[in-house]
Amino acid sequence: MSDIDLAALEAAVHSLPERIKGPGGVVGLVKNGEVILRHAWGFADLDKRVPMTEVTLIPICSITKQFTCAALLDVVGDPARLDAPLARHLPNLEDRRPTVADLCNNQSGLRDYWALTVLHGAMADGVFSREDTARLFARMRKTHFEPGSHYSYSNGNFRILSDLIEGAAGKPLAEVYRDRLFGPAGMETAVLASDTSAPLNGVVGYEGNETVGYFPAANRIFWSGDAGIAASLDDMLAWERFIDRTRDDPDGLYNRISAPQPFADGTPSRYGFGLARETVDEIALTGHGGALRGFRARRLHAASERLSVVVMFNHEGDAHGTATAILRAALGRADAPAVKNAPTPEWNGNYLEPSSGLSLRITTTPAGLKVHFATSSEDLAVDADGIARSSSMTLTRDGDAIRMERPGENLRVTAHRIPAGNRDDIAGRFVSEELEASFEIVSAGGACYGAFEGFLGKGAMQPIHPVGRDVWRLSCRRSMDAPAPGDWTILVRRDVAGEVCGLTVGCWLARKVEYVKAG
Image 1 (tube, rainbow, N blue to C red):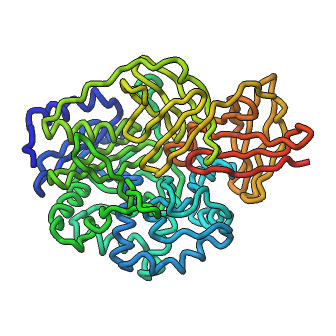
Image 2 (image 1 turned 120 degrees about the horizontal axis):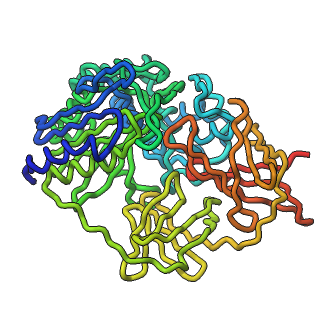
Image 3 (image 1 turned 90 degrees about the horizontal axis):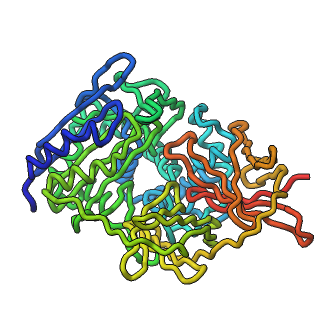
């Protein structure tokens, strides 16, 4: 167990306003069960000049998920007890239904419901009510992989859990959180605030950056289970102290939700019960990030060091990187030198991964590779052996094939270079029977655009870019949820005469949605 390097910690904390520019933020540390640092800076509301403080309520976004899972275990014990009621929430699912444990571990294979709002025509600043949730789940017929076999982040997993918990407890989730978690942990002001349309305690979340400026973010979404908790820094530090107090209790809630959760084939998973697992300088960490439009948060817990870090911003700065830097500073760890082996240009290009139906886009940089596959780009360093690596992904090039391993998802696949020669005959209206929604592609002055339409409305037109032969890309950088789904891959299907007859549309969060050409 390491001692705290107070000088390095103070220097790191004091540098945050300049390193992570934005309206405001808070940071805190707990060591050996005691708060050793709590610091706030900037403003909760720039226009009204409301300062950010250690008691300002801030949405903790997806950090909520671990509280949802802890509440589930405290209410019912064994998640399997709720497997039967789960069927009511997925009435039209044709593939094998996941278990409640699969939901807790993001192994359900259910497409993320926030990504699906894009396909149903939602506008980024639109309203999403509690009733809309059931309408989305009722339309789910397919999983995008066999439950238990892989990992894929799905907010819907935890939204369903919230309803299951309320049914089992016979009371609203807000009361379950309060009675079973917030009260025992000493989180005196934490609350479930499902309606994000009104600021809590005067805090405003901001989009933008130093280049374009900062402007208030609009959120008109009902959250429950997947997000929705608002807490102050002091509340979150109370949670970390509660974790430390119960560290030796095998039945303690945090010990239960942080127990390793394998995949169905026995492979260890990096995610379970609302907690992600990672390693920094060979120190095992559990924690989770949070992202709501205008807010970012991260908490990390190093059990071996009895050390926890909490970071929350009311803007869209890098909370994960900040929490990691604060952790390393507290432990007196120097920043690791960057590995820079310039990759060969043969890496450049677009590849298709057939099992997911998603494109893999690789661009070389002086420091390595920039890879687009999931919701955002990832930077990989090319080692001396010619293999590209990051903490989440390994790529090996074999001519026009790329072998990709993503251990956190239990995914080992091969993607093949997409041949050139796209045809621009894809304009038309396409219908998804599964979603009861449509997708219109138009050609406007030689450029292609697409717009989705469904029960949530008529979505905005978005540019569609050619990738290769019968492969196109629609980029979605802003949607109801944050972060947005990212790149949607559009695969064109043709009939025997070579005419376009349908499309397969998917992103990392929602794969292989089938459309047929109408008319």
